Image 1 (cartoon, rainbow, N blue to C red):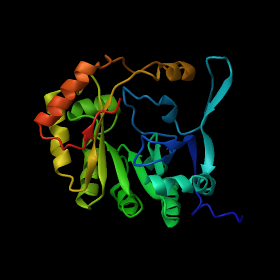
Image 2: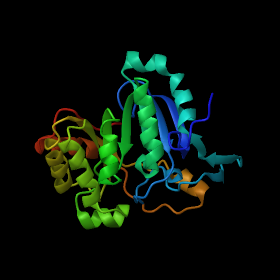
Image 3: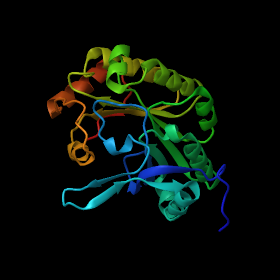
Image 4: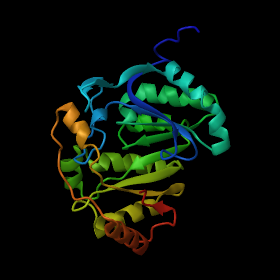
Length: 267
């Protein structure tokens, strides 16, 4: 196989490729997790995704484990082609996730372009980070955008994610205004955003998205504790774990504020 030039075969650090995923978009999917994220969410459950470069740690058995290795677009496409037989029957395809895949823009764009050129359905899972020009380029390459809506209070958003709410929200509204198919992904953190103001704002935003695929309320969990320990980093903050009663209340509030029937709370 001839070597493609860097301009059409860019590279990025990928920390995982999950084949047969059923939680990152419709159907059976191959999800590519790109390393590197400009946000610093206090509840982040993938701390190994934050830094762009590979990180080597010792696991619980004292064995060496490396999070991330460099992939070129062509290498990922070779993996995707192995799963083509599963994509069409299930309505699946490629999901590009992270970290924040838009922080490795050229890789993400060219991977999406290559997949689409072979008839593969492409989902992009993003915080909304990126410039308007970058999102303009992605519009024609993505079949479904999974976009985070984290916090409604601007100061709280800045303090707990390290990013301006307005920047990310403006990109969601831009995509919505251009007719992009969008599914909102909303982490719900007890004592932080499990309140009427936030549930109401989610529903209002959803109402402004003409091509809405649905809403996922993502309950906070602390299963990443061991990863922080491996990486030698302190857990940013501890939050209460939601119980089933809390999740039931969230659903009631979403219905009260007019959420579409397509909202769900994954277990």
